[in-house]
Length: 89
Image 1 (cartoon, rainbow, N blue to C red):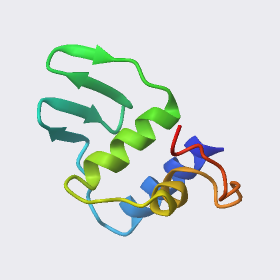
Image 2 (image 1 turned 180 degrees about the vertical axis):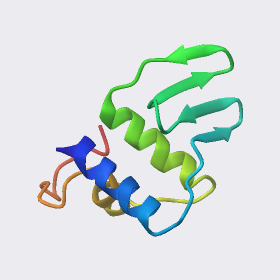
Image 3 (image 1 turned 30 degrees about the horizontal axis):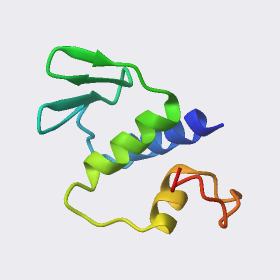
């Protein structure tokens, strides 16, 4: 379900004419949004879908302080239990 939501969001972004770069680079860390892979230098990093979504979110908001609620809203389903400590864990 989460991957479908991400795919729909990306499709909507493309339809609106807002080009999205396929790569994001930050301090030697690179993620490819199309293949959903991550690298530190030449070393590939294996990530779950959720881990990749978190990494992408953090890289897009570099230098910003993000609240638990912002992270929950962006990464977890809106029906997710808001009192959960999943972000803390």
